[in-house]
Image (tube, rainbow, N blue to C red; front, side):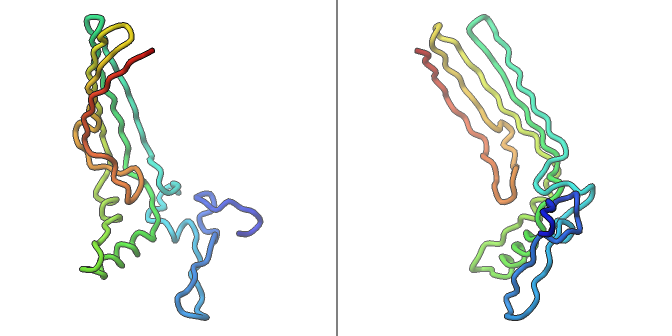
Length: 163
């Protein structure tokens, strides 16, 4: 790290670290944003989405009933660490002792995500309500971080008592 410069997409060729070689005396590999990224098009920071949209709408029906939904959209994550290629190769070569991780494959196949949540509720009394909530209604297979798949569809019954 020279002169306290922040190493990111603003300085794509600056070396921010050197890997440690497994062979004694062998030189390490210098790492920069450019050579440690999967896709440097547009110099996007790693693990960022170019486009996101969120909406939440709720309707009150007949005074005590309500129905609502929330929607989230995430475009394809533009850039991830190139090290995931090495992880994929290592785990593929270690079969049957390790299950192969397909991080890069997943990243390349998933172009964007649409997530829809739905809820129905009933205000039973002034201080009580009950709701049926369905998260990830379409059961979308999505990951907001590599190697961390988000929750599948879930349905919950919620009771709220305000004291």
